[in-house]
Length: 297
Image (cartoon, rainbow, N blue to C red):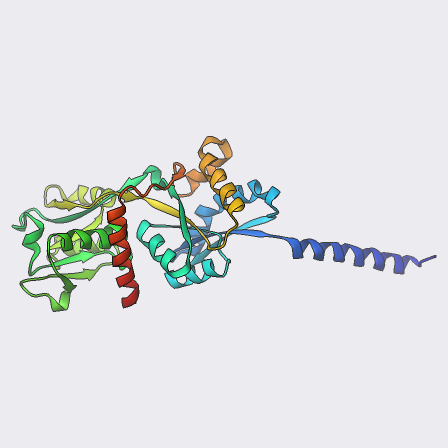
């Protein structure tokens, strides 16, 4: 059968397009997710890790990887439920909340900024006359935000353990402790220094950095129990063989030169390792507090 040159070129083009279409249809993307307000910066930090995972998962049929940034926890939960995000990186409390909202499962601990675990502090002005948590009765404390692990939930847990009742600041009485959300650690520090509140809560590392320039004008009143610095969670329904492979890749990243470089760009991550729930009592209490917060939102 003879074809004109035009017809031949058309047939070749159709075959190429068909093959490209078939390849596109079979293409699989592995998506990594974060929650943040600066998508461009968040994508820049996490993309090297996504690219590394994408290359390592080629044998599993993945042809590319992407970073997805959501602004709210409900958006993240929806993305996880719908399978549009495969792995998510977040703080301990938000990870537990997302597990409740989406069915996602915490799988690994992330050593964010080289730190495996961290804790929070409740601090006051040195000349405040406040020397123990019970002295906060009738006063107000600045917390970070609803699902902050060491900036809200753990400090609240400590206060409740002492029998103190926490209420919104506008409803504080002499027998309770009022609270406001400051949302930024810098706000918390400023509010305490300016006597807008009597005490503040934040993670110990940030407190050490921000309090340096204020000399002896501040003091730590109490420290929270330690918790994992950051957590990796997997979407619900991820096949077990894929999950095992992903964990294997992440836990070996710090042993590979290319992997080390990708981790360093992701907020100086040192490594990923197994998540150990060593304080089950604390975890159970945190889950109860998170459930209460979810009902109020």
